[in-house]
Length: 192
Image (cartoon, rainbow, N blue to C red; front, top):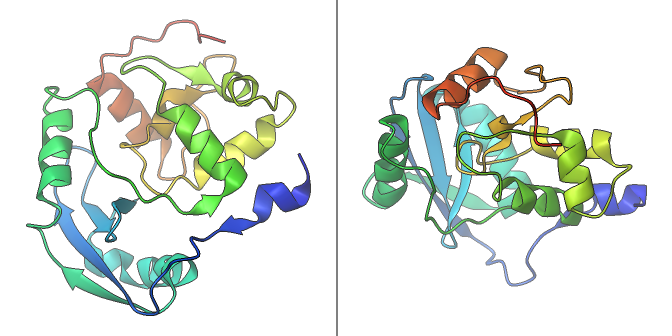
């Protein structure tokens, strides 16, 4: 895995010159959540209100979508909001949403691997590295996990240290533990 492969952004060639992104907020057991959706799918989840997240969201979305407009549209994000509410209520284990994940080819490979981790189970960073065919890229997997733009939906909270320790959740280990508790995870040995 070359450094260039790890860090080269993959941006679709057919992007419009002006993109519209839609956002909505919801309350959750882990605090306020703001969702962003492009014309192609859910593209970002932030553990903040929109007003708290606005500056960071604008910077992130400009990087991946160029010139864009942000429009408040809870109805457009209704399916994602409903599935998140059901997830937090313990009624929903798998998300069925169209995603628009922007990142490097390596990051996207890691995020795809995260989506196969079963509800209520955990794996290690090493397991992800082996699963994607890059067993020596454990640290890079951690970096990609940290840059996951749609946590919860792409369950990066299900990755823990090989020793079973809660490590590496960018929005706080307390949130990671709460999400795993919601899923019924009882501290058991890591799958790999």
